[in-house]
Every structure is written in structure tokens, then in C-alpha cells.
Length: 111
Image 1 (cartoon, rainbow, N blue to C red):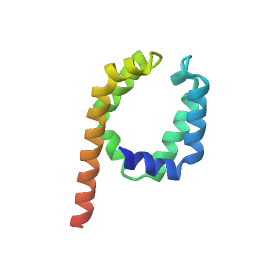
Image 2 (cartoon, rainbow, N blue to C red):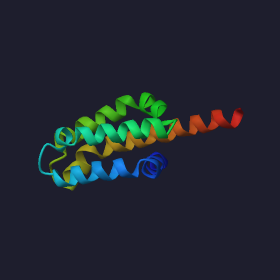
Image 3 (cartoon, rainbow, N blue to C red):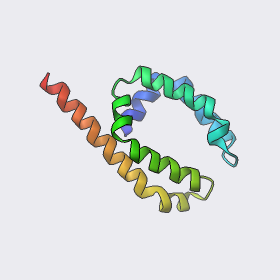
Image 4 (cartoon, rainbow, N blue to C red):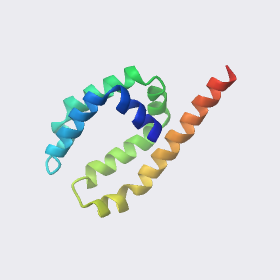
């Protein structure tokens, strides 16, 4: 997952900064709704700039949704609660993205 973050961060730094600033400014509120516009701009940039990201989103959709739902439920709680409640979902998401990236790389190597 680090490779995806790094790729998006390098190509969409402006959009990522806007989204992060919005989330930080609204951490105690409903930041997922408040920052929706910035999140969509970041998603558009990432989808256009990082070719394998769309495939990764499709392959890991259920893990993304599980983690997102967990954050929606527990995101306003202390970090230790979020880690306890959502840590396993994040781990599964990371494993899925890592597996998918390895599959993409393997396909590239055989071409």
C-alpha cells in the first residue's frame, strides 16, 4: 500500500494536501461529508495519474469498504480504539493491495 500512497503523493500532492488539511480542520466533525469535494478531486487525480490504482480498487473493493465502514463508525474515537476496531481490516486491505500490485508487476514482467 505504501507504493500506492507514494505514487499518488508524488503525482497528486496538491489535491492530497487539500484533502488532508480539510480532514485535520474537521477531525471532530463529519469530515467525510465536509471534505467530500476534496476527496473526489484527489480520487480523480489518482485515477488519472496512477494507472494500476483502478485495478487495485476493483480487486480490493470489499476490503476498502470494510475499512471505510469501520472508520465511519469509529473514526472519531481515540487512536487506540480505532486501532483495536479497524486494525485487522487495514491489515487485510494492505495484504490485498500488496498481492494485487505483485500480480500487476508479474504481468508486466512477462510482456
